[in-house]
Amino acid sequence: MIQYKLNEVVKTVNQTQFSLQDDLVKEIRENKKQLSHDITTLSSQVAEVIGA
Image (cartoon, rainbow, N blue to C red):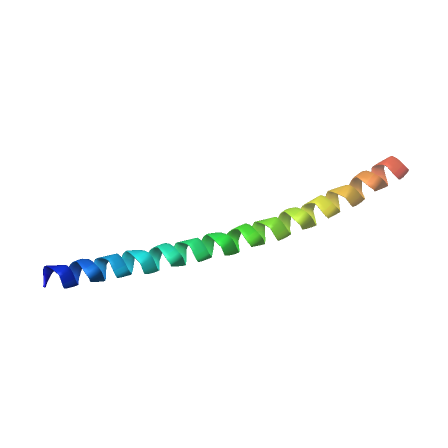
């Protein structure tokens, strides 16, 4: 019985860890896209200032 409960705890911890890692990867990808967009916008603004 104790072994079964321990196995269930391990299973739950592993599932939670996978879920957290998956969420983190998604967040990193979203942040990377936003950073890329921000850099593009900033580059355009710098070009306007230099060209003005």
